[in-house]
Length: 153
Length: 153
DNA sequence: CGATATTATCTGTTATAACGACTATTGTCA
DNA sequence: TGACAATAGTCGTTATAACAGATAATATCG
Image (cartoon, rainbow over all chains, first blue to last red; front, side, top):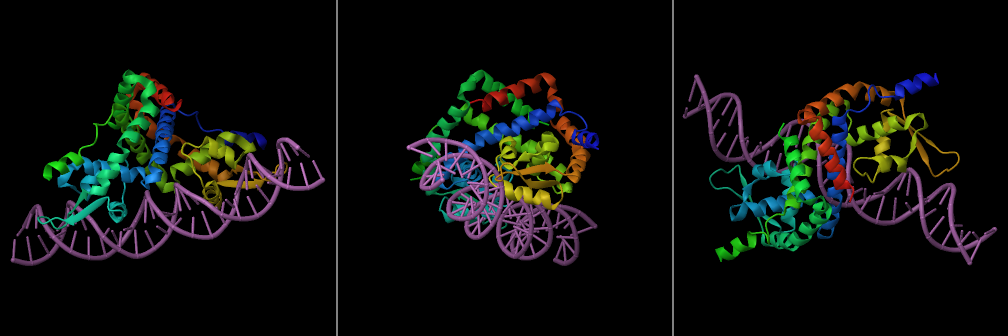
C-alpha cells in the first residue's frame, strides 16, 4: 500500500533538461521583474504601464493606434482599453479618434508622461546595470543572443 | 515649439545594453509561458497551480508547510491560502493542521492531483522540447548557466 | 451597390493578484 | 513565568487580468 503510493508519487520520468531551462527562464525573469516593480511602485506604475509609456515615447509626436501598441508590448495584454484608461486618468497619455479611419484611436504620450519617464530614466538604467552588469559585456551579448534564439522558433 | 517637443520626447540617453537584455529576458519568458498556459487551460490549471502541484509531488507523502511551498515557487505569490483553496476545492490537494506546531498547515498532494500531473507529464515534456530543443544541448547548458548567473546576484 | 467579412475598440463579467490588517501559536529573554 | 517579538496562516478589500460578447467603421467581393 505504502509502496504503491510511493510509486504513484514519482513522476513518470525525471524532468528533462529543456524543462529545467524553462523553469530557469521563468525564475530569472521574475527575479529581474521584482526589483523593477519595487522601483516603479512609488510612482504608481506597473511594469506594463511603464512599457506602454516607453513605447509611446518611442512613437514620437505622431502617436500610435491601440493595436500597434499591443503588438510591441513585452507581455501580451488583452485589455488595452482599460490599461489606457488608467494612464489617461493620470494625464500620462491622451487619446483621439482618427479622422481617416474612424475605428482607430490614436494614443499619444502626454507632457506628464514624458516628465515621468524622464524622471525614471536614470534609476531604471542603473537598476538594470546593478542587476546585470556583473555578467560583463561578453556574457550579456551571449545571453541576448540565446534569448533571441529561444523566441525565433 | 515643435523642436522643443521633439527634444522632450527623446529619452535622456539611448537604452543601455543591460536594459535590452532585461527586455529580452521578459519577452522570452512570456513567449515560453504563453504556450504552457495553452497546454494547461483545458485542465483548468494556471502555471502557478501546476507549479504548486509539482512542488508537492516532489515533497512526497510527508507533504509540506505553506511557507515551504512559497519558498520553492517559481514566481512569488502573496496569497497562498486562496491558491490552495482552489486546489483543494478540486480535490487536487489536502490540508491538515500540524500536531507539534499548531500554527502550521501541512499540505499534501491528493490522488487526483497525482493523476492529473501524471496525465500531463508527457505533454509538458514534449512542449518544452518543442520550445527549446532546437537550441541543442550545448546552447541549453550555456543558457541555463547564464540564467543562473543572473540570479546569483 | 449591397451583403458579408474583417478590423479596431469597448464593455460586462468573472477570476486572480496585490496589499494590509488580523488571529493564533510559539519562541525569547529578562 | 510573563511580556513581547516572531512566525504561520487567514481574511477583507481593491486593483488588475482574462474571457467572451458587443459595437462601430471599413474593406471586399459578387
